[in-house]
Image 1 (cartoon, helix red, strand yellow):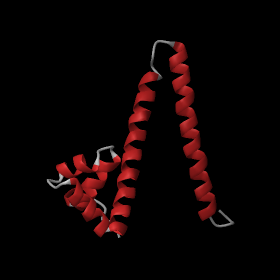
Image 2 (cartoon, rainbow, N blue to C red):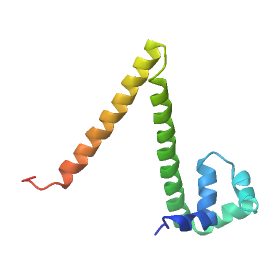
Image 3 (cartoon, helix red, strand yellow):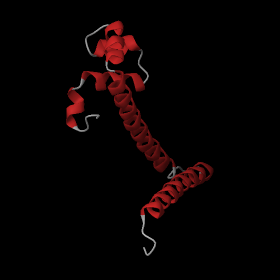
Image 4 (tube, rainbow, N blue to C red):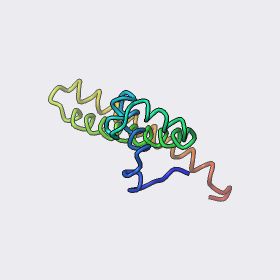
Length: 116
């Protein structure tokens, strides 16, 4: 089972996974953990199932944070003085929102009782 919460911030393997999904090479990720790239690879392969879970968690976090940043940029561009830019960003923001609503509704339908 993958650790969740603050204990991840002390887990060398998770910090390495986070560095890897952010685009760092094995060597650069290892340097942050004061080890060599070869040592990091060995550690990851020695704990392969855990490494894969930590990598997925780091990817999930990165994608969520990137999404938040993208939404912030869109929201700022919605106030742009150029009406075409403001319109295009508003449409993009609305589409993202409706996609979230649509997918949330599907998951609620699957989990609901027939009488709900």
